[in-house]
Amino acid sequence: MQRLKLFIPLFIFIILAVFLLNGLDRDPNAMPSALIDRPVPEFSLPVLGDKESVVTQSVFQGQPALLNVWATWCISCRVEHAYLNYLFEQGIRIIGLNYKDDIVEANKWLSEKGNPFVLSIVDSSGRMGLDLGVFGAPETYVIDSSGTIRYKHVGVVDDRVWKKHLLPVWTAVQSNN
Amino acid sequence: MKQLRNHTVFLLLMVVSCYALSAVEVKEFSSDQLRDRFKVLVNELRCPKCQNQNLADSNSPIASDLREEIFRMLEEGQSDQEIIDFLVVRYGEFVMYRPPIKTTTLVLWLAPGFLLLIGIVVIIVIRRRQTIAPDISSTLVGNEQEQLNQLLGESSNIKNTKNSEMPSSEIVDDKGES
Picture 1 (tube, rainbow over the protein chains, first blue to last red):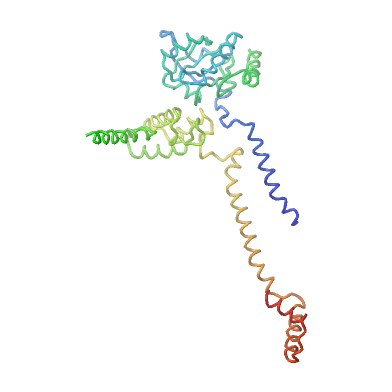
Picture 2: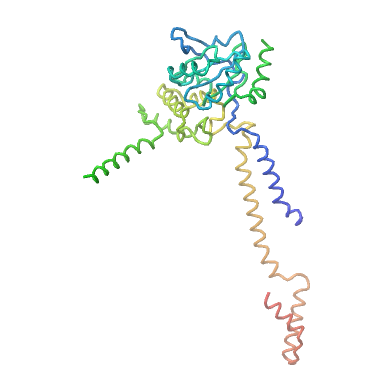
């Protein structure tokens, strides 16, 4: 019994080590989206670069799409943009959500860096972002052909993230179409 | 003259810095009751972006948006529960610093009580040991009293006969010390 007591610190250490080791692989910023498997919230907003037209949630009906939340003030979006261009070349349908941004700046950004988006929804007030549960750009959603959100990634989409997380969902969504 | 100008600049800077420090924007509530409810809500709701801060403390853009939204909803006459539900639907139960009791949050709710219990048990055990320990030294078990009497008797005999036997007196000294 006395002997066993000597091992108490070791046991405590092992328990702590297991928890900490487990925590290493976790992203503390990763939060399960409350909107997974729910339809894209209703909205009616202008399109970037086209003052006349108004876009609604029906834009997500019919074929799957990625919804990418971006802004010119967002530094990580700058990093991500090249990869979005690459995805566009691969024929991925990406719809942009220009989140709380300056429209002139946003248009300039797209003409300078290339436009990977089918269209960009202008959300100057951040109202749609709020309904989507956006808490920072960039964020990328996988939306299926019925307009249902299937996956959400917070942060930059790069080759690793795309292949590991988004592509499997995207493939599944495509085959269900 | 130059010194006066420096003073003025310094004072102006102080005034400006006061504004810079207040991250929370000024809001005009229609009643004190609403303001109190707002205070409670922004303290109990968590900022989705900066996860270890509540909405009241955080100066991230999203926290400011959410404060604005809560303000708007309060002024519209919505209940606290409606406002919390509104945020939970969008950001998940994560935003509540006071989460509901469910199977997933059970550990969260029970852990403090459990740890307190462990603490109490440890204190009781330590206390017990401390009170038992002096008892052991002061009570004589079995024939120890007999032995002691014998030794005391021997030493008094020794005194009487003035025949000093080293070993027995040593034992007496030991007992006296302990």
